Image (cartoon, rainbow, N blue to C red; front, side):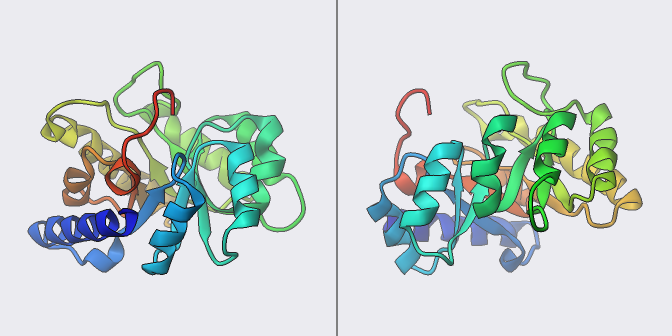
Length: 223
């Protein structure tokens, strides 16, 4: 079933990209597998999918050992400093750099740290992580100074019935990215858009989508 849903999501991404005059090849789909079984992940893997997202450090570390080594794991949840040592060695891209102390933790350790996205709370929801838009430049600058490869920005839009309501959130993140890229050209990615709103995100310039329920089915409460 996951493979069938994955195909449907890919089709809708292509259609949204075409409406926006974009090349769908420039949009990365991260299948959020945080509640999927290993069999579900492998079904998507057999369809050629390689990018998967997890939001809990322990589960990511354990799953990375069990599943094929060429999977590119994305950490998409809020990350505690004491959990970095579990996540960092197996992460392809950290989507949730949201505070200065996490910069320090992520920069430590052997080898080159995996690249990161700075999480921005565009909508200003207090229950969600992320820096305010006005603080994003400071966090990007601090991360770059510590040697991190900041690839772009991430945001989580509010949950609403009509995805059109969050279009301004995505548009604002894109404008912020453009401003930051004038100083830091490597800041180019926009990780925005999930199951309920990814088509709108594509139309507003998303380069990375984080889609879980549309591929693997509903998440249990609390996940």
